[in-house]
View 1 (tube, rainbow, N blue to C red):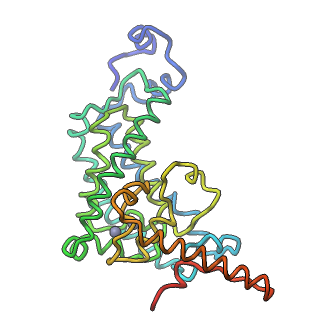
View 2: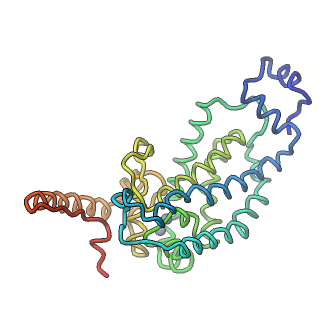
View 3: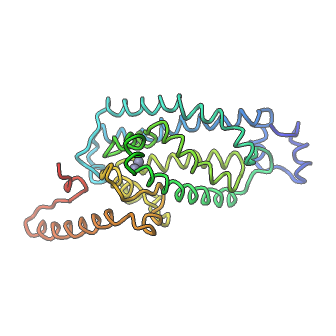
Length: 304
Ligand SMILES: [Zn+2]
Ligand SMILES: [Zn+2]
């Protein structure tokens, strides 16, 4: 709720005219409590979990031929009922854990100083804070995720997230309830260290989940804008972690690649990449000679 009754009062307090986006924010938020505004996070998460994975789920079910070459594990196909079961399980977690967690975590959001008032942050401020949030989350998530791959952590908690050895977008938030709670800490740490505006917080929560859905999508598109982000892991990078499964000691990081590089936990993935490049180079040469071609992917090396 804003401490001004009218736009003129807000302008007088800021000592300038409100920008267009500040006027929109004033009209929307002036009479709403901070708690009500914070609860919008639940709606955004529901939208992201339900809508963002849909286009690639449609591509997978319709078996659109043009997209097949971008599928990371081409032989792994989930049916519509299997996808729906995944979404249903995620929604159960959403209503039992994620939603209630948002409802009760408001005091901590208030305590760290997430603000709802005017002025709104500049675009640069929002971008700078989001970069910090992603880096803090990536580093903290790396160590928690690596810890969850010890025998106890995997068997009791993390095994659930690894049920999908060839993940789809809907499976990004599919995890044990305890993992959802534990991994809430890295997501919260960035905003706690560099608190910003509620709009930045909403953007952070939505972008982090959209990023997770992309990395679990099962498709690696060379034209994805995320390819331009330095040290970004992406779908192929995290898909390898799911493909290897419980024994995986590779690709723990959630967003970037540098933690796995620094701590030496990307060796299996790098070895596989080099092997594929070599094999596909040889196949291309022999394919040109024999008039045919074949492309090796992750699944061709699967032992079972
Ligand atoms: Zn894992
Ligand atoms: Zn995953």
